Length: 578
Image 1: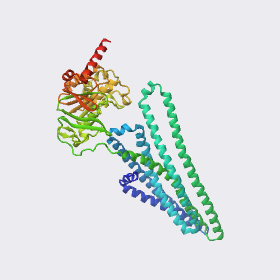
Image 2: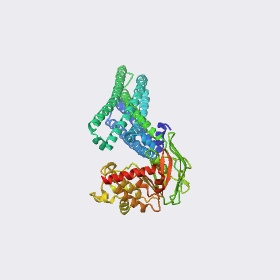
Image 3: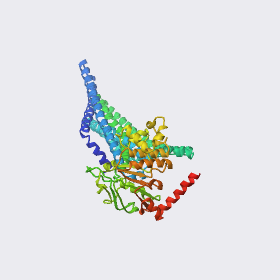
Image 4: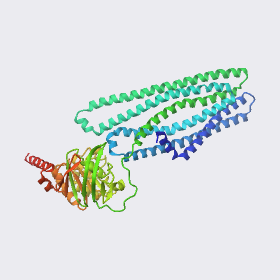
């Protein structure tokens, strides 16, 4: 689908209202063209004998035509501009909904600020194209055509002279319009870069200040802002040349028409009323041509923005969702059969086989980059696994609707993200209908209660953007509480205890021992202490399972796990001595 066809698809949703708006535009243009005719007739009548009744009649006709024109003009704007707002609303919802469906790889390659620029500034430009640009284009076309027809009825030679300006205007629009489009796109693209830079600096304000980069970042922003101003000035210089050139052409035309009309009046071949009406019609025809230049600018800006939006809409969702919901409650039996997965033809997981029965806890350890987080991402379909490789209760997970699958899973990701809300609302994000008692219990199970007690408003304390007021350990425990409040059948912890001390880790693990009863639990960790109580432990290396067994058997085997256990035991003993 092209950007233009996508745009027309939104028009189709409001075809009835747009048709009504078009009828109001036609009526408004008709009454606009009636006004010069009334004035011309009035001038001719007033040039001869006239009565008070004639004066009143023409005055009422003029006032009536003006009121009717204004009423239909108001209705046209109210309908068409209103539709443009509705389309903007639909497009913004669709754009945001599409972003929610895109794969994680997409966000790893995109800048947040640029996406925000497309969702705000670009959509506003498209709305200006849909509303004012479309409305004024239709109105201008009707008025220009109608005015020229009326001018032909009055005087053909002068009308044809006025018509000579149209191809000149069209040529100017073509030349300037293409350049306006290119420079508008450059402005919009750079606005996205500035937005991304500002967003990153505000999100990473602690890092900026820790490395005393405030002045350097300010200078970078000044240079970017200067470049943005220069790109805008380049666009302004172009439009500043375009509009005066149009005005100069139109002014010249008025001079020629006035000269020819004056000679015809003197020669007696044209009445004063006809000349006045012709001048009004000329104005009616010319000023829409000037407005047409502004409309072209809106079209070029709008289409440049629509193409930027279309680039995102053209990205296909990474997951093909199932449509048939599952009626049975999940038991939590997981099975992985010969799973091999690659990013861009680079294998990350190789021939993985694993069975996790309902109620079992599996520990997963391995070096950085061994594929641990990728394996968990495949279980939750954050990445799409090859068909027929992962099963839940003997059912391929690709046949389970994504929303339903993720409702059954409580996930604590490796990178904790908290919202600029209260602690309670961040926990309740896991289950919107969770009561205060449920939130309190989840916080207690996650080992967060002691910290919350020291906060001035307890769980109601607002934690700032990305939880900036919390420590790393407090963030992770809040994320754990968010997963626990779901009461999931499957609980996944992706190295979620890395930022807590060993004592807090032990408290959380003790709470999890009772919580994980009757649940399937997968724990990824680089700490042996987090997984040693698991029913089974697997060791990943270079995407393969190289060891598996219980904690005791793996220690006896003397492989990677045993070496990791010995090193961490020595480190713990040294910490106690220190």
